Image (tube, rainbow, N blue to C red; front, top):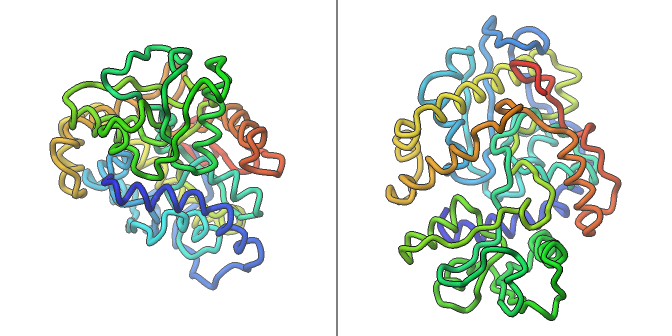
Length: 354
């Protein structure tokens, strides 16, 4: 995403805890239930057509490669689904719109699910889109850091968003460093420029498949990247598919359509992983990103989407979610007690998850 887009996105994510509060006081809208077929099952049903309105987390970008590959190859159509994807006006809107029953599904973030739970938003994650963290500490090329302890005496640029500050504090603990050992600089959303101008030695808040690649392409040298889990932050899913939990319980047609959507997404993601060149071509046709960036970012993103040994595409690891929710509470990002099992499910996957 471009730098201005990242600025708006990050600011919007920070606002979700406030925006979601309104959902708790609102009743369901009068939207017409989605036509569909039977109740959820492990296989895709194409017994009846269904239309789904899906709010994206942001403009189409490499994170959405599985989604757009499925659309391009007709997998949603094969499942008798007509799917309309909409970039949000505000990146905090998607989960709220699903909870208010204004859209059928959303692409959102695992952390937002815990904010939504705290504010009694009726939403459930039904599949992962990006199963691993993208937020990272990106160290400028030429700065000699290969392990966290070497950040002593260095400077780190942060956005000022609470979650990124929590990442920073966790990094210090993991590295065994005191706050006085590292200089923290609030660079706002000028993450890449702050590295390129040598204002800071590293940044926290950039994505390893976006900002890290931008730095590399600007400098011609690879930065050192420490993903969130290497900083000591529990692993989490960067993006997930979010459905309305009330509708899942009360509307069999909606639940069936969600099941078919998830199965089509899984098929699209697996097919894209096996066809990196074709997937890159698809993303060039649906985004406005620089082709040179996409040539590098899309294949790399697909490696991140490839299921780890013992896992399957799209599956939610409830234990890992709980660990991340507990970390959020420990770091005062939420005040309620997180319950991952109440806001995530593998019930709508096309197969049994480990």
